[in-house]
Length: 465
Image 1 (cartoon, rainbow, N blue to C red):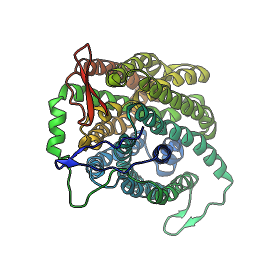
Image 2 (tube, rainbow, N blue to C red; image 1 turned 45 degrees about the vertical axis):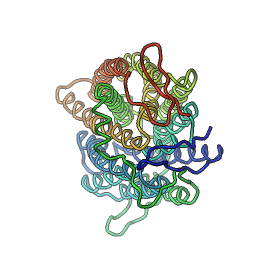
Image 3 (cartoon, rainbow, N blue to C red; image 1 turned 90 degrees about the vertical axis):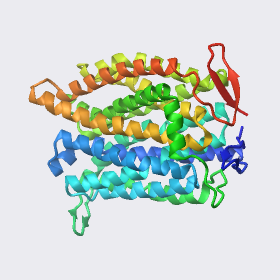
Image 4 (spheres, rainbow, N blue to C red; image 1 turned 60 degrees about the horizontal axis):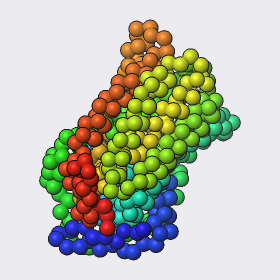
């Protein structure tokens, strides 16, 4: 099960330590825990929109900036350099450092007294989180064969939905409980407000995880001093541009799916609160479990479907499953925000979240399969970079701007109208883009540590030895 295969590095072999199966799954569990807490820290703001707006005097557009552009621009700026570092250096050390950084910055969000202070702290969260996905996904690709890689990736990709669900349910309960707390006074800041206390508390677990990673997680790749691999930017862009039809359409499709995911994460809680006059705790208790269960179920089912069947056809199977999920998603993405009753809306959102999670959870698998070994983290980072620009950045901001515009036109429930419009348009485009990616999947360069298999449709794919 454990891969100890070779990869090109300066013309030689990149050695790897042998790792016991239990140690591999421990690594997956620990990395998934980190990813879960990253989403709790990232998404807790979506629950606290109302008190943050009231405390700092913000508009929906400013909240969209805090949840989107301010996060995504710096996530993008840090992602590729940190991914290049992950292709060359000890990935467990990189992950430990980044977990510590984003946890501290989340706590600093709770000390913000203005829009600009909160934006600066959000930028710090973004920079800290940028290294985790490429480091973790490439580390798992070195630990598992293809079938187990799909399962490990599915477990890791549960995090956005488990983390989001915990942020909604736990954050709502924590915010409600804070009404009875005697809030401390921080010198230079003053009395801590309830929303600030929530930020500080959710940042604390990362300060425990960071040293645990440093002490217990071993990178199976042996990093040799003074030896550089050939994963240069020139080689990265040569790989991407030589297969630009596939890479371009696929990366844009993933980016638009992340746009929808982040639009729902950032604004659906506020939309439910505004439409049905709920408080934060009641909204979290209703929407949080649906988000967690539907998101986790979609991710698990996607991992199971991708893993079963012929390993040599995993790329084709993954792309077709993603397109099928997008076709099913179209109706609830468009219609769920407009439904008149909360039970109907939640039921439709459950379908939407299931399909969204299934598609997004498969997003890294194609490049884990086809990218050259010394470019894996960087190709995943390029996908994350585009997803951050379009998804994390554009999704919350676009919905916030459309909501403000709809309100100015006296549209009923302007926030829900904005969510419906963004959902219908993005999913329609995703279906087209995934069809293009499927049509141009042939000829994509396979990884050098795989055996070649030619399918009857003429597509050549390689399976790891």
